[in-house]
Image 1 (cartoon, one colour):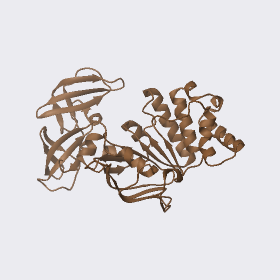
Image 2: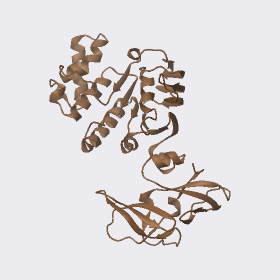
Image 3: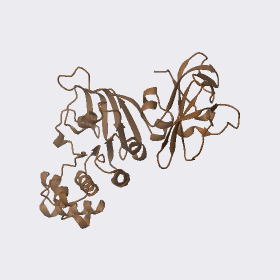
Image 4: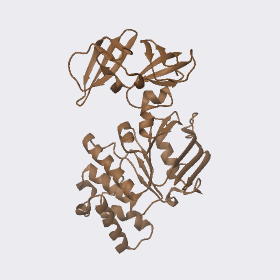
Length: 347
């Protein structure tokens, strides 16, 4: 098994003058060629985590390793990491190629070679025709590509992305996240991507880290994270969710405020408290074909979201949120047993 490019062992950090730790007891590895996205609510520690890896902050406890070497006390400039920030931080008076070449200049690469490598990297990101333009003459997406090229031109150990797409409009953001993934794969570079956009994280990451109050709640591939969250907190944060308190009443049954739900066999003993997760898109319209998990009710809120319609259906004992591409009146819905996910505990 290859050595992780990035490894954190028991890393903790607190900002001066604060009682609570910004991050606490973080263990994380990123393998060669892997893209790991970090998500979580504001203040959860995701940007602090990136800054600890970059060397802008030093842990109070724990160890940071790059390619198996302890760099915990090594300054940021000596860690050979490519970093792209939300603001891009391009030099406005320099041409695009000069911005890309700047890290090579700092490293003492001769002028002709750094221009050659900068132009080659701009070609990789599709901007060779705009190499002589300055940042104010470029669009937001083009500036983002220049920042990416600059972060990759010196063949860094790893790439760190701190919400680099948040300043772009929605349509451009989708195209650029695909571009980031393409470049990351072609370069086979270990990448940490901090973002507040869950869709972005789920769409491009090999694994997603969910942070909460400075700790890691779960690390998993995107589909596993979405379909099998490890805790109620993760289920509530990632995507839209129906979350119900439940009590196990049989090997394939759980009692909830909206009634007894049929589930897949779960192996939990009767009487155990659980949380039931039902994703809105797994709620089906119409009466259940097998006669189980059917609900009749009335719509109390209806939202048109373009490709889908999300509505709240008031049923005896509560409300079910559902999504569908169909229009028209809804009176009955059902939830297949394999769409009822059980999370141990109800906190």
